[in-house]
Image 1 (cartoon, rainbow, N blue to C red):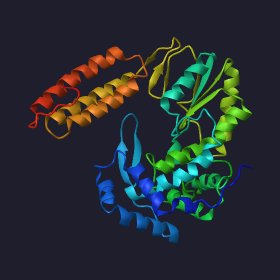
Image 2 (cartoon, one colour):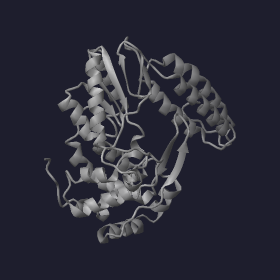
Image 3 (spheres, rainbow, N blue to C red):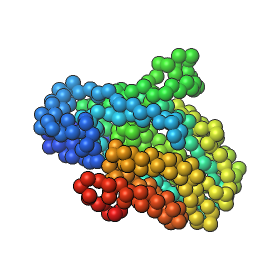
Image 4 (cartoon, rainbow, N blue to C red):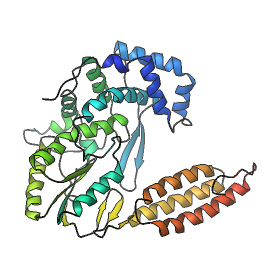
Length: 368
């Protein structure tokens, strides 16, 4: 049984801790209306948050919902800025307590990890084994069971006030897409009676996802003793014998039933590592080559065309277009895409130079 920690609430439910959390939450969000409004009355807002936290009256606000259609349909939710401040303060204290128990090959939403290190680890195992079991969890975020998640919180936290706040954040989740799945022991109404689902795009949700799948990580690495890589709900196991991977798949499916989760029937498969594989936004080849998926390139070209038109019309600042180009280029830099970037971004930068020259102040960015 892991050590349970008490007396945590007093370390983050204070004005100095909330002020530090507000500084983190505001990064990259200063021009957003909610962040700007909070910042304008910063001291008053922080004092109000501190009082609500201490007297137990704090409740989460209403999420802003965005329905994305590409690359796949999903609901992204943005919490009010004051709630993000609370989550940053809470995570500063709570996350390290769980981090100590996470395995090294869980790469999502962790300091010093990330997509590119997960891809590196995948390639390292791929080069040593003949087959890979690729797994994906069916509708993971909408399926996260609140009762199980709260039980997981209590494995490491004993502070009653901190647990009450974490429960408030979980209970304040907006409704996610319905997932009607029955598990052993359920009656007809169980899927309707159990609260499920966490909002995608939430800091606390990203942390909770790792907590929720941490038992799976330990099961795969300690019980199955599998070479294993996970990024959110996308994970892979490697072996030279496909029969072993078939057994592992069945055991993982059984294990996930206890977490009220199921493997995705179409996205879970066993394939030779010699075949090209799509993983976390890259196409990986056994030769060591990396490419970007065609739909990624096509989608970026479409977005870039729209951004350039908006910049010409004066709706979008050219500096914003540059930042988004740089973001895509940073992702593309981890694949063999030099010629591709030159072809796409070269033309875009030429168009941006024309936009800069047409500006009344005649100011130039670094693309000029």
